View 1 (cartoon, rainbow, N blue to C red):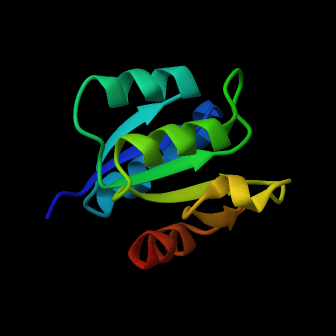
View 2 (view 1 turned 135 degrees about the horizontal axis):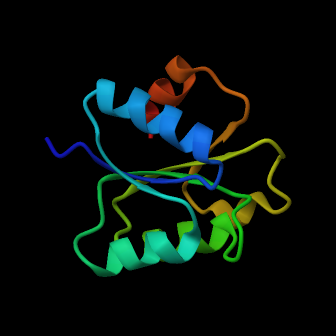
Length: 114
């Protein structure tokens, strides 16, 4: 089973922490700091089966990244994260929403449910 995961989080400390937790849980993580970087990763190869995307990114909004991931591979299971509730939940499509702060176990449960 492919455990590839695209992580899009602009906060360096949190990105590193999440990357470590996810790798220890068996995921093969590609971490990006912003939306355009994530889109470049997607353009370079097949979309991973999982993605965790922060909604408050510099430049490109997380909702735009989610839309691009969903368009390139509708089968990708996406978790959207933010400290704020999404202004327009419909923009998340089929992505699950996980509000920050969250525990590592909550993220892993969300990925299992996605």
